[in-house]
Length: 428
Image 1: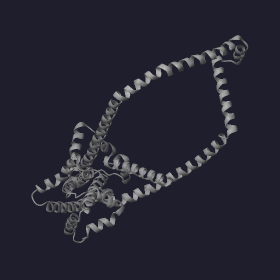
Image 2 (image 1 turned 30 degrees about the horizontal axis):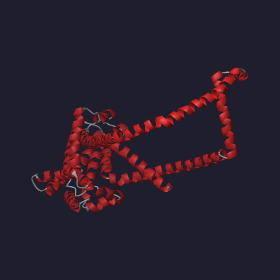
Image 3 (image 1 turned 45 degrees about the horizontal axis):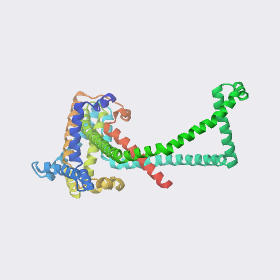
Image 4 (image 1 turned 180 degrees about the vertical axis):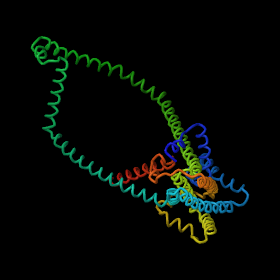
């Protein structure tokens, strides 16, 4: 898929925004139900907490209404995922043979591997980025220290009392001379003014000006100050509470608008991710590099499913049983393997976000559907052929989906906050 096609995916129209919101709502309720429950517990006993708890319990209600028990449905869909993934890899191989280049197979397998192991390489990337930014912050702090020392030394010299008063006097004389020259435009005219009677008239006006200022001060101190203080007390007693109430109301209104905008933004991003999954799956068999987009989105969904299942031992046992029954040759303990591939520093906090999550049946169903669409697209590519693209086309920024762009931006922002906090702590 080229850059223009990728940009068309994020073209926001009212109809598409409504579709994104609907899909994002489904993802938020069914995928992040454990997070909603955890957030409801953190909020305490109030109306928003009860709403979040009700939303978190909705997936289990829906799953229990399905024919068969939820564990049975989940394990059945999970076996279809593993089988569809094997078919996906086989079709990638045949498409590579059909196109005469290994690009499709390499990009598809690479995208699937990167997405499925995101909790393995993402912490390493964060750590590397953190070290780079820490080095930059250390160099910047050293330069700041040098500049502080140099400026302090210069100020210490300039603030030496004899030199300081001399510089201030010269500055005042220079300012007065500059103002006089700016008013009269020539030194000859200034000299004629001094030796004439007009200079004495200007000097005689100074006492009058001082007297006028003194009269104004007496009027203010004896009459105007009492009036101004009475007006100030009236404003403080009657107007200030109203202004404070309006300020609090405006603050709550702005906070509500920010929360609403953030919620809509999150729902749109989640909905766009689901939309792009199906769009990438539909284009898998058209170009050789489109397999990377589909493979990465599939692997990312698998990683999220594995993360949710790793938080509950019963769910992890279901994944292990499904994997061992689908692939008895490569039988393994899912929970131990996932913990071995994912550092505890990133895995434990992420697992703590999910409080008694339901089975990720919705995510597995979406993944099975996307894999089915991708396999059909690659079957069409076997008969109709696909467009050859070089592997260097994968590194174009325009190819990144909106979810990946936001993830990279959030990663950079989070790393900057961490470095800033670390540098601030070390300075203190």
